[in-house]
Length: 467
Image (cartoon, rainbow, N blue to C red; front, side, top):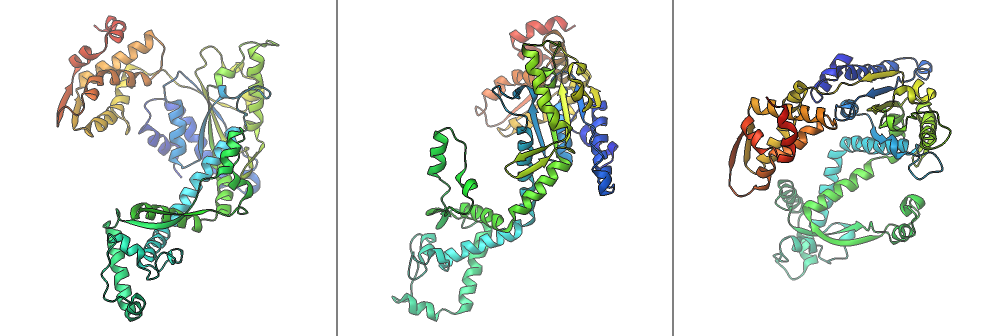
């Protein structure tokens, strides 16, 4: 498990500035590890210290939470508080955030278990394809009496025959020759020589008319989940490429090897002990007054609905009961018009750690453009390189772009680092549109190019700031 300093170092690779927020989340993550080392009876008494991040949009609040979860492979969901409404009104219920979290956890757990059996599944899939090619698969036994139908299809419909009596010829074929032929086909299969060849396979028919009928009536129900293994699975024959058949067979073999009951148990455990839920726009549900009617009442209603989830409760999901006691909640909001103290006291108490994120400076924009592993300029270079367009930015161009972004955020709505995407898209609009006119193109973007290619509607607002 990483130390808090090591966690911050990892976050620094993707997020510029906001050291206080990084420090807070790194300590919260480390405390989870510390809790796991305690005696079981004490673990139940140690609850996570939830965090509220306060700061304008585009400064890294969501990215910090998302990267933190990815760093430790923890189930993560982002929800917007404004999408929830008080019980009795139209909108999502607050329990849906837990159902979303367990869905993510199940997919994550299944993926990890699939990776563990990937090699075995690939071998089994190869054997199934070889059985079809050799004519030894039971499902295809009715295709041709000589067992060579698939091999004929593979070779374009023609198979040399030494005799007009296939059964007698098959009896004379030695086991060594059969094994040698199977080995040859296996080598061709693995080398990709057979990828585009067609074979006939028997697959499950995933279409379900009953599902469509219920959906048309406005009822969201999956008959497979409802009746489990009671309903027989339909099968159908299809002619598909071997590469596609191999992909399908590998997935089918993985499904056979994975115990879904174990997946669900592990997923619930993972969600309960490691899950992270990011609640954005929490400032929008803060009441600005203690009015007894109007929108403030609805906002408080949403807060009171969220409160039991954050405090710790048991939520019923399709996978079973999920306890929320040890899920880490990170709330965030700009808090321009409201304050954290405008939230109901009970909810405030469940978020003891409060971190103020600062607005981004010009120097921050320069670093965002160039330093992170997913830096904006690196992304655009890679995108345009796919069309053989090589672009480069001079230092003065980067400085000018950063200044435009900072000045525009100051004079208009502050949308943080998202402003950089607006400016870069504006700069590269012509280059991106003219893609394909030349076999290769080299473009150097300097400060002069930036000034000339900023569109007039943006330039009018910017140029009065440039000395």
